[in-house]
Every structure is written in C-alpha cells, then in structure tokens.
Length: 380
Image 1 (cartoon, rainbow, N blue to C red):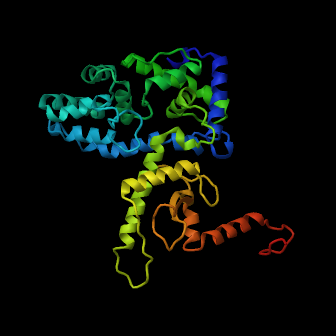
Image 2 (cartoon, one colour; image 1 turned 90 degrees about the vertical axis):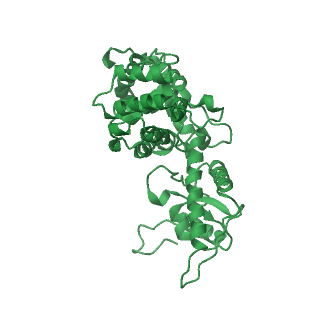
C-alpha cells in the first residue's frame, strides 16, 4: 500500500529543488513553477492526456464487438492509436530499424491470422473487461514480451486515473532521486507496475505540500518523477523546446498543415473581392522542417511581442496560440518571410508594414495610463 512506502526526506527535498530548478531553466524568463497545467510543464508533460484523447478517438473501443475478433479491425485501431505524430511515450517510428519498435508484435500480427486473433482477443479484454488486472497484464507480457513502454501505454489508454505510461530508464532514475528505492528496468510485471503506481500515490501528498499546490494527480506525480529523472539543464543559448523534439515536430506538422490549407484556399477560390495571392516555395515536408527551425530558434516565443506562444496540441488562451505570420504580406509563405507569432498579433498586424507594427507595439508598451488623468486620456 502507498502508506507503507518509505520516502527518504532528504532525497525528496533535493528532488523538489531540482524540479523547481529544471522548470525555471526551461521556461521563458526563468518563470518559476506555478502549476502542472501551465507553462513549460504543460507544453512538455501535459501533452500526455491530450495525446491520450487523440489515441482513444483512433482506438474507438466502444465500437468493437466480438464479431470483429480476428478480422484485423481491432488491430488496426490499436496500431493507429500508437502511431501518432509526436507520441514519444513508446518507440514506434522505426528510426533504428523495424526491430526497435515497441509495437512490432502488433504490426507483425497483420500477416498472421492466428497471431492476429490472439492479439485482438487480448486487446478486446483490456478495453472491455470491467477490471483488467494481474492475470491480463501477465497474459500481455507472455504474448508481447516484457516491453514496459507498450504495456504502460496500453494500460494508460484504458484508465488514466489508475495507470500511467512507463519508460523505465527515466522513471527509475526519477523515483530513486525522489527518495524511493525502486527498480523498473528489466522488471516488467503486474506486481512491479502496481508497485510503481503505489509509489507515485505515496509521493502525491509530499509533492503537493512541497510545491504548494492544492491537488496532485497520478499523472502529475508521473510528470514530477520524469522531470527529476530525465530533464537536463538546457545547453547554453538553447531553448526549452529542445527538451522534447517530438513536441516541436508535432507542432510544426500542425502549423504546416494550416499553411498549406491557407495556400490552397487562397489560390483556388473565386470571390468578388481581391484576395492576396498566397504561395509557398516549399513542399509540406520542407515547410514542416522550416517551421520546426523557427520554433527552436525563437524559443517558442512570439517574434514581435516576445510572449510565449501556445503550441499545438496544447490548449490555452486562443489569442496566444502559435501562428505563422508572413513578415511582408505582399510575399508568400517562403523562406525568409516567415515568423512565429501569437494569433492576436497576426490578426492585428494584418497586412501592415512589419516595422510600423513593431513601432506601434513599442509605443503601447512605453505608455502607461495616468491615474490622475481624465478617462480616455493618457499621461504625457
């Protein structure tokens, strides 16, 4: 049980100090920790729950029936719920070869009818049984092998209030630095997984007290442990976005899609008013790579106001959402004419000259209302 888990108070205090230091180091203007759902933590850790929502929409277990077993339908749903751009909760893209993917058994089952049936039967039970537990987890291990990232991810999709994703190396380092002597590497089993979750529950009240937050969820404790065990100080001159490349990649993908749609719409419409031609000299992949470079070089900040932008898939103030602005509106979406800005800046700037718009922004910043002046009048 969680209350029986011993936490080394000295180590935990040091872990909390390190956590605060890492959050500030990777935040614009070294902003201190405020909440697990704000700033750099929301960008680099909060994606897990948003990713889960997207994965569940692809998995769609409510639509499954026993008649689907062996047909490949359930298998394809599971694979699509894993192969999501920006998903770094397990290895799936095969960048180190097909054998390096955590879900290779699912992919291989496509061409093996008996294996496909066995795989889909296990998946059906996981998402349809009222209370999947030790027996089913061990059956998954027997079938797929001791692949902790795959097990943790599939169980996390099942219930985010009970289960967490699990990359053992970083989390093992973090849980030990947080004052709990626990081993994850090479220990993929239900007993070990349940024990780790108990350890996270034991940390929750300590994290809440030391960070002065009202409530720490299971996934918040998971994020705390991951930051403590995995995050490193940013390189000199580097940006916080270098912390998790897949976040930049995902955001660049979505922003590139929006630009390509804008280009297609602007150049294919027939309207009664004049529409400025919007073109690009890049393919979608080239545009995606260029936008990723812009995100990295800007530190995920608006290039006009220097305010932090909200990168997709994160949700927040819509006016702060990242937007691709054409510096000179009479030119297209071409290299050298693009910058990252907040959506409200793009909207207000419209087709204004960039230097004039910066001048106006600076003018607003330099003025402060005179509390003694009549309403509507600024101080001289």
